[in-house]
Image (tube, rainbow, N blue to C red; front, side, top):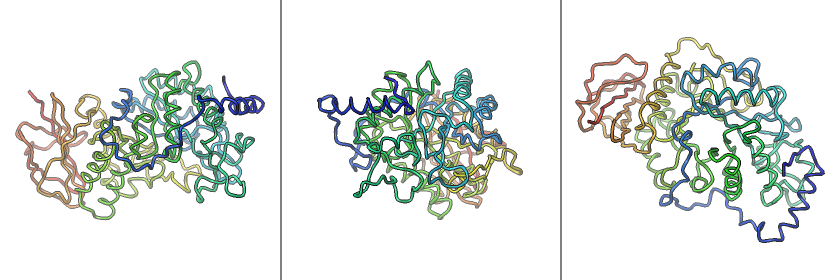
Length: 470
């Protein structure tokens, strides 16, 4: 049954029908399991992600700010540029109309969704979105959109059905968080809401419709885990190789529901090292802590910049931001770029800029050749499977307070990445076998004489070395 929010008669019929079905065993839903259950899942195995996710590079787009026009066409017109850089997965921030009631700023948040079945008219039409997806597919790229399942705008079409929402002791609909005053929290103990959301999700991935490839799920750990598992089981019937990407860092979500989550622990380590002068060993500590609690084979999105953060170039400086990116591309998982990183854009997009129009500045001056560097990092990842597996060896070096050294490897190749996370020059020794057989392959860098395992790095400089295993 195709359920559309604009058809309240059909929605009322569904609610009544579900009320009857709820009396049967088929709709005796398990108790809601939220993502903070505190269990250790390290002995379990993560659900296998589609190869296109595991091998991919995600590029996040804020449609309103990606171009001066702020439209789907503004994205479609630059697909060749993104494809040439090597991006393989486009993530579009919410494409639905934003609510006006209790909205923040001039435009309101794209995460205050008014109608899950509609496209924000300022971005274009559904046909424009279809064209964007079709053009991306022709280039071998996938497209996912933001799913805001935890809450809606206060003037959402779903407000005609208050039983879909959370209420306080006085029966008033409430935000999911006291500070999120522009949105109202959804209540997933309601079976009809679950059916509505799953039916809506099928709509956007339908191969005969818009044909999206999956969803980045906002605030995923605030929605019951059993809903995500239920949704996944249903959505794969429509498109078997979809992806669900959790905005969360919660082990239970990775067992059955999600393919990819956020590496917030490594992002936190970046802030500690680059902003608070913590030792560079903080990166390995964070990586070890995740390995000790997540299911085996969990894929983490490796991020240093996104719409919820101050821009990396503003926080860390251009050289520090580039060092951070090199680390994220060198770790296991899936690297994520946020629009404008390839030009060193420092235009904010988080709150309060999230509620305004602040286009990416595409012509930043006095920057390193960032696009070429990212293209080189992506090409290394595409060319060598050693960068796409889960084997990471942290190598000891003679200056571990400032320098990170790690190896990515498989049966054919070994790569060593060395990064100076201080603003001071360092000279150090890396502990690695067969050191004399490694040669530098640092993307877009003037290659230095091998000299390995002795390395001399300027502030925030990095090197990548390669050894072919005979």
